[in-house]
Amino acid sequence: MALASVELTERTGSELRVDKAALLSGEFVQDIRSLLVQRGVLIVRDIHFTDEEQRAFARSLGDLRLGTVKQEGDEGLLKVTFDEKVNPEYAKFFFGSQLWHMDGTYEEVPPFATILTPRVLSETGGQTEFANNYAAYEDLPEAERTQLDRLKVIHTMQAALFPGKPDCTVEEFALWHSYPNREHPLVWQHRSGRKSLVLSTSASHITGMHPAESRYLLQRLMVHAAQPRYVYRHNWRMGDLLIWDNTGTMHRVLPFPPESGRQLHRFTLNGEEGVTAVG
Image 1 (cartoon, one colour):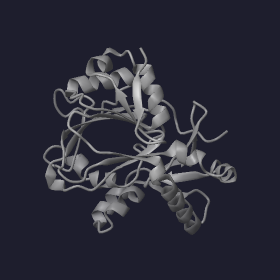
Image 2 (cartoon, rainbow, N blue to C red; image 1 turned 180 degrees about the horizontal axis):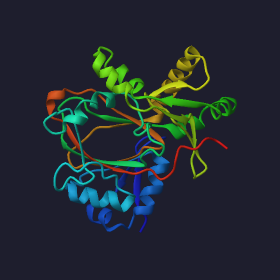
Image 3 (cartoon, rainbow, N blue to C red; image 1 turned 120 degrees about the horizontal axis):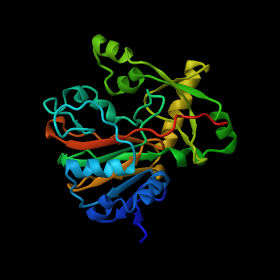
């Protein structure tokens, strides 16, 4: 039986028409992985996964990132929230999620995908947006793609976070600066043969380019990639299951009241290939 789906926008996002039992059976794993890379983000409504079911589903799709287990039952689970009582370490950096980014740009092999379900939602704001970096690259003129294929970019924590908190303290900026930098190609040549832009607010500067020219080019590409035609905005409902391909999309959460208690439960799949320059 084929996996039924409906496209949510022309370039990004599909809704799967499948029930919980079918998701947990593993029957559609390869179909889901293939469609995920094609569409960037997949959603299923009214699934109402428990943490255990969400973890099992994540493991069926790939290698689960375990992280640091805080208490029994939390294996691989990250609680995404501003609430410092729930996740004090994550809450310190969560404001950066309101800017367009890819996860793991500080790693040689960024995470492949993330699986999210909501546990508490805000009455206002809090939608999550996804931008298709495959499509954004593919729509550029051929001559420009050829130029971008040769460039490399330095990603830093301070570049990622300072735009979201320009009134930071000296101590906060020093903490961000203590994180290691990472150089990646601006264009990722995937094993599949497709190419995508490696764009993120963490992109500090282009190696070997004058800082002014570098800043202009990265900002122009970010504006290009975040055009509405490449973006899917998800309006959360309780019971949702959402999966995104971190290797080919950017994402951000729209502002919401921090005191709302908004909380999503997240499981992440380890990366399966390094960021490879165009050969």
